Amino acid sequence: MTTTPGVASGYAFVKSAEDRNTDGDVSATVERSSLYQTMQRNPNAGYRLMLVSDTFSPQVNGVVTTIKNLIAFCQRLGLEVDIIEPSQFMNVGFPIYPEVRLCINMWHVGIRLCEFRPHAVHIFTEGPLGVSARVFCGGRNIPFTTSYHTRFPEYLHALVGLPVSVSYPFLRWFHAEAQSCLVPTPTVRAELTHRFGPASKLYNWTRGVDISTFDMELRRQEAWREIEDLVRIKATGRKILLWVGRISREKNVEEFCELGEEFGAKVLVGDGPIRPKMEAKYGKTVHFAGFKRGRDLALYYAAADVFVFTSKTDTFGNVMIEAMACGTPVAAFPVTGPIDVVEHGVTGFIHPKFNDDEPDGVSLGASIRSCLTLSPDDVARRCQEVWTLDAMGRIFVDNLVVLEHPEDRFKMRRKKHKINYWTALLALIIYRLYMDSGLESHQRFGPGSKSSLAIPEKPAKPENEEEKKAATQTLWSVWSSVIMTIYLLSVIPQMSSFG
Image (cartoon, rainbow, N blue to C red; front, side, top):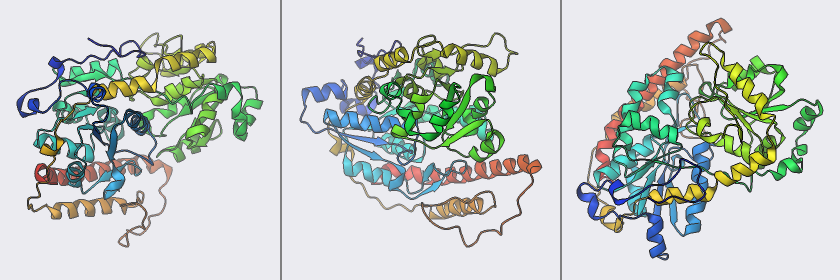
């Protein structure tokens, strides 16, 4: 057993020949050692790595941050890195989150892979591009690795009521053929082992924070004075409680907004689908700062006295380590994500409930009060010791599987197939109807105007019909997703012989 130096407790990396899945035809072409070791033996070999993700810039989320950090790390090692991502394809906005793009012409994934002929393939997401890459590699006995970032079953259950018992079998299928599946924390690994079975090839993968951007020096130098709103809030003498993230239902943001005024001034950074509703309801007691990134975001972390993390569905929560790197302790619930990221009493507090009947806000309030006793310098120092980009990159590269002769597996085999364009057309028509249904107009393939077939605008509905509107939107969301899934399944079986 080998361990990676500088990795937090619980993140020991274990990999041996027995851990590999070497059944069948793949065994003859898969290196028994990691890509990192292979590169050490052949530093000038010019190994190529293809990443596949359904989310990438300009989106801002934990997966995109992780991918960008990994690309920089791999390029420093000498790897040639390419990525397959939504902007390279025709795409439509996801019904619930229009900023999330769902790709349509997924068969081009195989073409991209054959053109690049990578020595290693890693799939980040379980969306259309991820599924396309998984099916393509599986059809040609090409080894690949995956990672698990988002608890989509819980998200879909919270958003549209879809039972998790429906979603998890799909995830189990998706990750089953991967040579290894990287998970963010030991707790997530235990959960997925329970759901996927003991034979699952799950490995812990730590995360890292960019200390060149999220730096304790910003707090020491009071660099937050560059932002007038922060100066004005600080002038009141109140403690600043900070929340950062996508303002959406599954993030449990309302729990933060409901905190009592006795805890301090509440500052909320981010944007999302329910921001207008939240701002209308809590605008008098919560300062909505809007979307921030980079140094501007770091200044908010540096100004805050406590970072409050209210999500109960995240697998990790990169915003927590960004806050800690700036010296801001984290108050959170004792759930998946915080229990592995926050060191109770060191970098923050995650007080449990005293009993089941106790409201969530009581334990969260206790954690906030306790955080005010911690030293920002100690929080930042511990964060920089544990959450390093080098540890994150090393574990990732160590888990990649090398295909020594990719030209043999990525040959173009352009057979003539009749793609079900009628299904594609039906999918787009249904989606167009959804967008024109009076709920909200979203762009279909990026910038563009609303369809000329739009239904005339309906008068604004009174607030007492809000539940009816939400139910209608949920119905359209589910129906659109079903149609897109039917289209996806009609195309995917042909992909093993495409491009």
